Image (cartoon, rainbow, N blue to C red):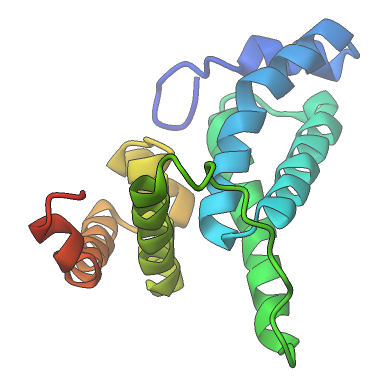
Length: 188
């Protein structure tokens, strides 16, 4: 049971990983890696960096498994916090090391004859999300993309539910303003 009293669905799996069970480690990775990758990609806006963060978060999970203390927090919540901290470390390094020219990026979107509108909309949404202040972006990503409930997201961010709802409200409002032309054109 966690501090909130709800059972942790990952408790038995983490215990097996901690005992060195390779099948459990593989199951934990297959269960958690896609969500960590999605979180990091949305926070960082860079697929390569997101892959590095997700891999590092999973490595920390594997190392933590033998000493994991069930009942203090949900393992998933702890893993999200690890991934967010790794993202913030990278975002801080970006601010500290300005580049003369931006790195060249390969277009990994759909073929030119398909999905141009969807790719443009996704790019615009990603840019609008990246333009949000960090805490608003974190709240929006955790609640809307990672599908965490408000209580869990607030706990993860170490703020009250009311503060989370305020961040969500401001973030949504900013996204609506930034993407108003898409909403009016029926593209969202």
